[in-house]
Amino acid sequence: MPAAMQANYKLFASKCSKCHTIARPINTMMKRDEWERYVKRMMHKPNSGISDNQGKQIFEFLIFDQTERKDKNPKTFFPALSDEEKARLTAQGNRLAQKLDRRRREYQEDLNAAQGEILSSLETKMRGVVQRYAQENNYATILDSSAQNSPVLYASKNIDVTQDLVRLYDQAHPAKAPAPATTTPPGAKPQ
Ligand code: HEC
Image (cartoon, rainbow, N blue to C red; front, side):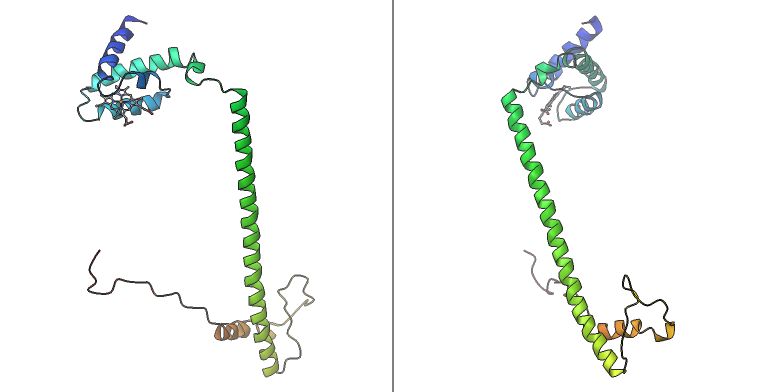
């Protein structure tokens, strides 16, 4: 270790062992920006006794130690997994992926079912409105020119009854007003 770095190490060993052993930073792998953040965090702890300048020197040692020792011996810090452990983790990962897949499918099915229910109830109600409208106004047929594959090639705007039907539908099936927000009654004591 270069002499300047030895001085940084000594500072590190004395300052960073005040509240925990130096094993803590010695055994921790971090990237440069994480070390920077960490040294600042430690400096800002009450009574850390580390000045800005000392913090910089300690940071330099930590980066030296990270790049020269830890990064060169990653196995020491991330012990190799045994084959058994690997197989177990892989199986667990697969199970979770399957579960997620199933949930996603179920959710999509429920969503489709709910949409289907809404549409068919809408259709039933609309059919009733159209029937009544046709009878009251003596229409022989009412065509849905918006439908896919509609046989209607041209229809004058003057005979378009869409707006009437929408209005009648809204009258027959008014949207429910949202429930009033519950408010604390006046004079209620806070709990
Ligand atoms: C004033 C007390 C104090 C000093 C001085 C101190 N630390 Fe800490 N350190 C803590 C405490 C408390 C924790 C655990 C809680 C936390 O992470 O904030 C901790 C946790 C850590 C961790 C653990 C991170 C993890 O994920 O396990 C590291 C690394 C660390 N300190 C490095 C240092 C370094 C490097 C120095 C010297 C610059 C230092 N500490 C000086 C109080 C201190």
